[in-house]
Amino acid sequence: MTNQPYKKAGGPYRSRQGVLFGVCAGIAEHTGMNVTTVRILTVIIAIFTGGWMVPGLYFLAALLMKPEPVLPFKQEGEEEFYNSYATSRHAAIQRLKRIHDKLSRRIERMESAVTDREYDWHQRLKKNGE
Image (cartoon, rainbow, N blue to C red; front, top):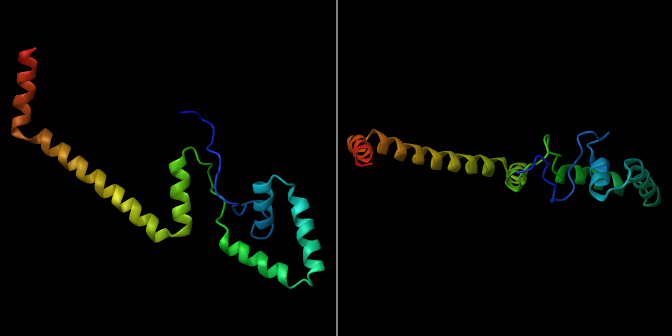
C-alpha cells in the first residue's frame, strides 16, 4: 500500500477554501481551471443572462454539491463511505452499525471457542503430539 492519496473519482466537491460556499473553487479544482477564471466566467454569464438565473443556479449547486472531504482518500472504500455519508447520514450510520454487529459476532465466536473447556485440551494435545 502506498502513501499516495487516493484520486477523487466522483464529481466536483464544494471547496473548503472557497469564498462563497466554495462552488467556483470546487468546479475549478474538478476541471483543472484557475479559480479566478471560473469566477470571472460566472460573473460574465450572470451579466449576459440578466443576472437572476446564475445566483439561483449557484445556490442550487451549493446545496447539491457535496463538501470536499477534510482528509484525502487513501483507499477506494473510503470514498464510497464518504459519498454515502454525504448523501444520507442515516444510511451511513446503519452501514457502520451492521459492520460493528458483524465484528461483534465474530469476536463472540472467537471468545466462545477460546474459553471453551475443550479448547485447553486441544492445545495441550497439539503440544504433546509434536
